Length: 458
Image 1 (cartoon, rainbow, N blue to C red):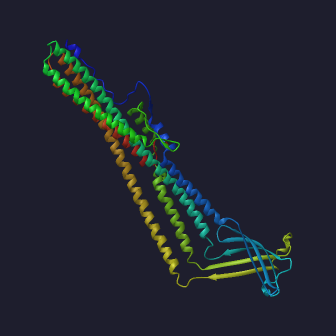
Image 2 (image 1 turned 90 degrees about the horizontal axis):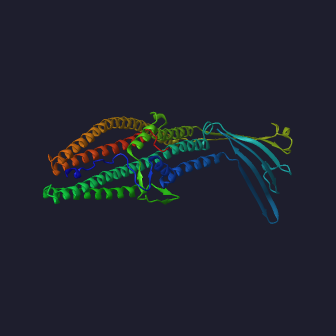
């Protein structure tokens, strides 16, 4: 009769499947996060804004049509009527091309403004020989905008990687809660089967009544653990659901959906690990582009120390259709010079740019060192956990063997329900310790990928 008390001790830890429903794969989950999560979409906006800033900076090189018109009439007399229309084309470096048409008339026209009655055409340029020759505000603005655009791309990747790391942790915690429930559900079934067998044995007088009480107490404990595991699973599902979106609407994870097992996720993360290359790391790229922008600003501020010398030269002609009429026999030229006497503002701005550049370089050096230290620490942690997981596998196997032996001894009347429960508790502890290490390994792997500037699912 004791053989009817023999029970199964198979535990579902690394993988399990419902009779109905479907699993949500780890990479599939991250793909959904990348495509739909609001924070990922916000990260894309950062890059879009940077692209718009580059477009705005390019506007400084757009051709500009400028018209100046003045007239004066008093007591029926036209004093003057002045028209000056120009097309100005800013070029790279300190050069600006220009062309235009001027027509002036009036009774009291200033002699220097006297022009042929049909007007006069001009074509020329303005060249900055001092400040603005090698770099000016429009060049510095565009180059800094381009550096900030590359910086925003690195920032976008960092933001996405942070979201994916948080989402990965949520998935792993969901997996842990789900596997715990599988463990305690299987244990509860064993405890219920054991209690039924012992109860029948007590009714026939083959077992002592105290064994029934021991089995019922154990059954109540298992029910409590299973209920707590279900509560933890529900909580983990709600946290995971915050990362599931569709068309800007949050989704709720359904009851019949479950995670994939540890082995599948572990293999996926291992296959995603790139070669270590900090030169392309987005965090360091972010600071490198910041330094590049500050170097441009420093060159621009240094250029402001030079005197401002603008040379203007225009060819004049009454016949714009005939290119030969634009020659050195008819021209208008000018020279403009200006320079502050003390240059206090310019020197102060240059010092600020130098200090900001020095600060950014120190920050890059610090981030590089911290990142390398983090990568090394994660590598050591991962190796340590892999060794420990092998130990827990042996621990689980030995605990299962001891429990099997205790059951066989009980069937031959050489053991007790108390010892069986004790062996079973040790097996549960070993299984939970193994599960805890598995989740830690997954988290370390995901964090390691992030430290390398990458992540699974990308």
